[in-house]
Image (tube, rainbow, N blue to C red):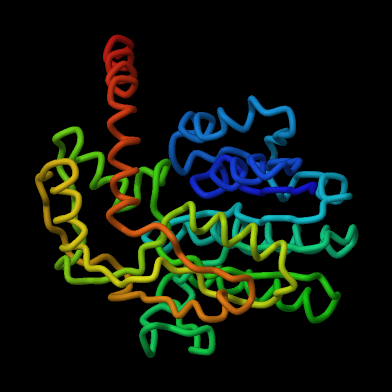
Length: 324
């Protein structure tokens, strides 16, 4: 199967590329390696895929790429590219979110309409729900995003539905609930927490620690994407981890696995929701989704990956000190 993955060098995108290659697919990645975080980390994410003969990378912005040419002949397009992060999406930065989350999605959909891939899978977010009316939250609950980021993800979802109903583009929008695992973005809570525990640093905890999330392991997420693409399902579906856990409980788990970090408590940030929990019955019925990695197992894999990078990170710090 020929696949296109936008955002291929990102946290989820790089794991997806590896899964697809392992399944025997031919994968074309698109990524402009923005500087939201260090592009060298993104290049490292793709090291395994780049060594594979069935993978090629286009380093280009979606709004500048020859998308019809790249998508022509693709059986599946996985659209993961976008500007991440709830907290930075306010104020002047909103224009960037509109460009990379809304306009870029429209460009991909327009190209897909013209060349006709068999399926387009869009990585949406539980942020579209905001402070949901009920938990676990079903897809029928009215979306009420509480951040500009959530607004742009919901707008892109609506575009997918418009192109599905108006032009027959078979789209799937997966609302991902707090994805974690090795290679998670360095600004995200689990990445910062595991790093602090392994390296003996400080972890900044926003809020009281009683806020809960439906944490979903990245391996389950990319499997859901591939299974949704191979199914007859179209529309919107939640992808969650199967349990609702507080940050205090997460702190206890990481302490057991890697030692206790120093915790600095800070106020809740604007745009952060209180709780999330996914009702995944639509995903189960549509493409057989059942999460298989528990939180403790997933965190243990993150700790193991972090420990393996400590010597390399120390070398980078030493080199940086020598240059300064």
